[in-house]
Amino acid sequence: MRQRKDFELFGTVVSPGKSTIINAPLPSLYSHATTQTPIYVRHAIKQGPVLLITGALHGDEINSIEIVRRMLNSKKSKLTSGTLIAIPIVNIYGFVTLSRYLPDGRDLNRSFPGSASGSLAARLAYFLGNEILPKADYVIDLHTGKEHRTNFPQIRATIDCQKTLKFAKSFDAPIIINSNIRDGSLRGLAQEQNIPSLVYEGGEGLRFDEVAIRYGVRGILNAMSKLKLTTTSSCNKVESIILRNTSWIRAPVSGMLYLKKRLGEKIVKGAVIGHIFDPFTSKNENLTSSLNGIIIGKNNLPLVTQGDALLNVAIPGKRSSASIDEIEDQLYDEYNS
Ligand SMILES: [Zn+2]
Image (cartoon, rainbow, N blue to C red; front, side, top):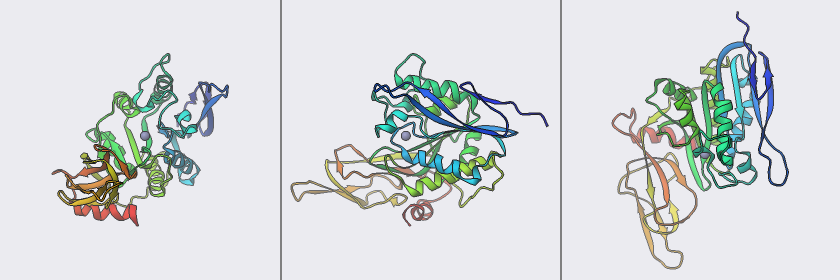
């Protein structure tokens, strides 16, 4: 068998069969404190694909950090071929300030491809997109809903690309959402470079969500198994439901929200799904569904202003393989039992 080449990142050489942690240097804080973020590299003896896993591009999305931590500590992640690059916390600045954003208010996941001489966000995007991403054959980028918003565990991907769809299915998330590329996102840059990439969404910012964490860990291990990075068998409970269309139900008035529906539950057009109360009078407005679909994202903050996004709803189209009732049967217990 042909000897596999060493893997090199930031001047650190990893020989076949070896693992290392590279502390990647980043711009220091104004307090003089140096900043670095650990990058885990496992380089197997046998040839195979390079899988890049990124957590906390949004610094407050701590489920992603826990997913990477558990995955790396799992015996099932022992590499038998290929290479794993795992970065638990990309946006270390947002992580220490409990913020989705960088200190200058910029969103790292809207800053790709970035530049070496631009803003801090542009430099961090350039560091990831230029130094690390080109070494990868596949990418899994881990996210959660923003603060006060929970996402049902889901893969977002460009499913019209067959290679990406196959990769998305290998994760075995409960649902796969066909999702347009956001300008400036890591997934967009990966797609430009023809690197199949998935975004895994689950849970809420600044909160641990055990269901979303378990799905994330299991999904990465499943994907690693299907890519033959490991020899453990994947744990496929049910086939992912593919949904193409999503839409938001927004607050018709301002007030205090009482939602009657939960993640994974179906809603029917015209049905009352909640109430919005005026805090000082007896006035209360019914929140009525304008859609037929399944709830895949939910606002958790009861204080709402007219126009606020309240529920993200997946709408099964004609091409959906399952009815709304069948999807609800499959999803509701997953999250709420
Ligand atoms: Zn995010």
